[in-house]
Every structure is written in C-alpha cells, then in structure tokens.
Amino acid sequence: MILILPVAWFTVRVAIVGFNLFAAQGLASRMQLSGSEFDFDALEKTTGHLQFQIGSALSGTEDPTWRFAESIPFVGENLYGVRMAVEGVEGLSTNTLAPAVKVLADGAGEPGASEQKFNYHALDELAPIVIDASSSIQPAIDKLETVDTTKTLPVLGTVIDRLVDVYSQADDVVQEFGPVMTVASSLIGADGERNYILAFQNNAESTALGGSVASFVQVNANNGVVRTGRKASSATFYNESRPYKAVNVPVDQSALDLYGTFLLDHSNTATSRPDFPTAAQIIRAWWQREITGPVDGVISVDPIALSYMLTATGPITLSTGDVLSSENAVDLLLNDVYFKWDSYAEPEKVDAFFQEASQKIIDKITNGRFNAAAMIKAVLKGVDSGSIMMWSNVPEEQATLDGSRLQGVLPKTNDAASVVGVYYRDTSASKIDYYLNTATTTTSDICVNTTNPSFTTSVELHSDLTAEEAAALPDYVKSAQFGAEKFSTEVFVYGPVGATLGEVSVVGGTEGSTYVMNTSDLGRPVAKFIVFLAPGETSTVTASFAGAEGTYGPLEVRGTPMINTTVNSVEPSCAATTPEQ
Picture (spheres, rainbow, N blue to C red):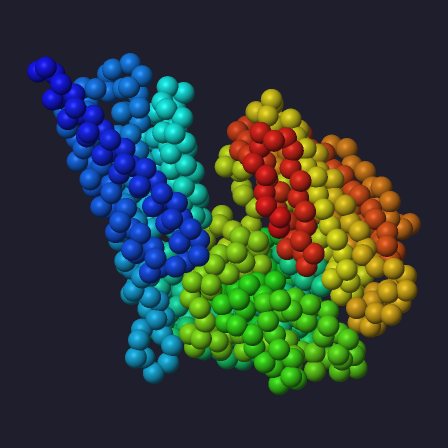
C-alpha cells in the first residue's frame, strides 16, 4: 500500500510528460510547415506554444524518480528516449527558435520610411542566432541518436525519427545560408555604398551556369536603400574599334582548353564554365573596361528565377501590353519574344523588352511591393536550383560565400557529397534550348565500395521538334550555322574530385556527334562531347570514372538549370538522390 501512491504519482507524471512531448512533436511539424511557407505570424505563435509544452515536459523529467526509473528494463529506454527528446527540443527552442522567430516576425522593412529601406538592423540581430543555431541543433540530434529505438515503443520511435528529420533539415539550411547572414547587412550597404552588376542569363542559349548573358543592370545599395542605375546589353560591349577583344582576367588553362577564347572575348559566354567566380570576374572586367565605375560584386538571375519571384510580386504589365506572370515568364522571355520581333533586324526592341521586364521586377522588389514570405521562398528556390548566384569583390564577404550554392561552384571535396556535374553549352548560335529535353542517369558501386567507388553517368539529349516545326522557327531561334537542319550542343561531364576518366561513348545524334577531349578542371576530370541533333533526334553520351582513395558522401548530380527541367536519376538507393535541377 505504501508503494501505491508513489507509483501512481510517477505514472501520472509520465503520462503528463508524454502528453507534452507528443503535443510538442505536433507543434514541431506545424512549425516546419509554417517555416516552409514563411508564415512568420503563425511561426511566432506556434513557438510560444512549443516553449510552454516543452517547459512542462522538462520539469517532469528533472525529478530524481524519473532518472531512477530509466534503469528499469524496457520501461527505462522509453523514459530515457522521452527525456532526450524533451531536452533536445528545449535547447533548440530556447536558444534558436524563439529568438529567431521574434526577429523574423518584426519584418524586414522600416515602416514610415520615405522609400523602401531594408531593415539591416534585423539582419544583424538574426545573424548570430543563425550562426549559433548548429550549437543547439547538433546537440539535439546527438541526444536523440543515443536512444535505441529498437527498444522503445514504436510510437516513441516515430516521434524521435520525426524530430531528427526536422532538425537535420534545419541544420542543412543553417550550414548553407548561415555564413551569408554574417555579411548580409554589409551587402545592402550598411557599412557604406555598394555597387553590383545584375546579369540576366538567357537559358534558351545554354551555357554551363544557365545561358548566354543577355543584359545587365547596375544596382546600388546604400544604408539599406536599393536603387537601379545604368543598363547594358551584350551588344554594348562591342564596337568597331575593339571587336571581340578579350578582357584581362586570369583563368586556368584547363578552362581555355574546354571552353576556348569565347570565355574571355565574348561577354555573353562568360558563364560557360561551371564556376560563378570565374564568370563574375569576367563580367566585372567587361563592365569596367567598356562602361567604367566601381563594381563590388556580380549577381546572376535567369528567367526561371524571375518566374519564381513573380509569385511574390504578382503579374507585371509591360508597355507592349504583355502581362508578365509566374506562369508565362519563361515562355515569354525565352521564346515568344523572338516571334514578336526579328532579333536580327530589330535587336534594340528585343533588348528593350528584356530590360523593361527585368527593370519592373527589380522596381517592385526594391520598393517593397511584394509578399515577403513568397519572395524568400522564391529566392531560396532560385539559389538551390542554380538560377540565382552571387560573387563579391570584397574578400571577407567572398570568403563567407565560398562553397555555398549561392556561389555557383562544385564542392572541392567528396566528403559531404560525391557530386557529378553535367553541363551544356549551345554552339549552334541559336535559341533552340527551349525545345531541348535532357536527362541523366548516374550509377555507382558506392554502397559497397565506400573508399574508391566507380561512377558512370549517361546523358540523354532529345530535340522536341519536328522538321516542319523547326523550319517554321524565327531565324534568330534557328542555328546561325545550320538553319533548321540541325543544332549543336556541347556536353561536359565533371567526375568526382580526384577521380580518373575511364570509358566514354556516344550513341545516336546526327553525323559529327563525338567525344571531344578529356582534361582536369576545378580539381575534377572532365569529359567533353559535342552532340548534333536534327529535329526529333536523340543522342546519349556516357562517361565513367574511377574514384580515388578517400571519403565519399552521398551521390548527387548537379548541372545547368535548363528550361525543360533535367531529370536526374541516381542509383543505387543507398545514396541520396538529388531533386530535379
């Protein structure tokens, strides 16, 4: 009888803590949903509820009786699991979630300002919270991973697995964007005026990083206020006295071997190499030589990214009467425009169309006329897909961007991920990639051979046109070399860091499709192919690589952001599969 009351009391305590934990798990899922939708008001309310539930649960697990009961077989592992989950969530909620959400909920703009001014003070407040988030997230994961879920109730195991998944996703975001937060306020002029070149890529004429650079806009940021300035097109950089004169930018010989002098003597193909720091420095050199003025960094955006941003700004009406929206931006900017005007006869009209479209989107952004939550989501999506990139001429800022997706570079090691890169460059002087479909299949024995695995990547290219459709295309879309007869595309397959190129092959395509060369670039072996496709044809190129001795992370494929999304298939199932690019 003496034991009945303590046992009953403890049973009630366990039930209350369990209720608090399961409520917290549900709140964590709700927070993940609110976070993915960038609903800061909902996020702030849910965080408050989470702190209450976790606080109640934590007080229950701190009792000495609880710790003693953890030694009881079967029951103990469940109680230990509950305590680890509670302590992990409590640390994360108190140290990271609550303070971060409070800053975010306050908003990014300064109310009452005569013009839109980004609140860089909020960025300064948020930066240390984001940077320190890993110190709360990783310990929470470590605590949960000490629980043997094979010895717990299935429902508790499910809760623990769910929390680990939520924390891991959050940690990925922190690792990717955390360093950028340390310089975010400086980038928008908190420490003095900054001048950037905004470069717009045209994915209808593919290059490794997206497409030919069609137009440029100067962007000035000073004390949180962002304005646009001078504009240019690729034609601006050429004149009769200096036709196609290369800019003075040092690049590796391997880059010149792969991409030729076009990398330096044509501003529109500066994005040929899958390394945005290379492209940005070339673009900066063109601007400073032909237009002059300080350039503190280069930002690249393509129409795919603009279509994402239009979900936040809403439709935009152009002076031509066209209404640009998230649904039609890619079609209108990368194909329909060439049916409206003859780009050979009236290039100034096409350039003006591009510049007005980009200018109006920029104006909406800089004037704050957009849905902030939708814009953040759009920008993150653009960065992740390679449609938004940035390089800074300020060494300290550039160092924080190194290795991030925003930097538009391949990883320098295989440790975190074993990345294979597949990139394209149109060489038929056309805008035909609106009609090109691409897919990759990458296989590896990485599951069983973890220290020096082999890799094989096959790349399929298919022309989604009939001969009749190709013949009816505007001349500017057709090949300047071959008309509607055929189109040429270079394919570059970058193997994992330190690997060695093995067998290569080319199947299908029109006569002339072939393996061109191999070299080493950016610390990786590269197989270069050229594929000629007549309308409706398909070709497949394949490259195999032998990995060097070392550490290999999950298998991934990255590549050019194509208009028709490249479908990347990665095998085996033990390795992480990348989403469509």
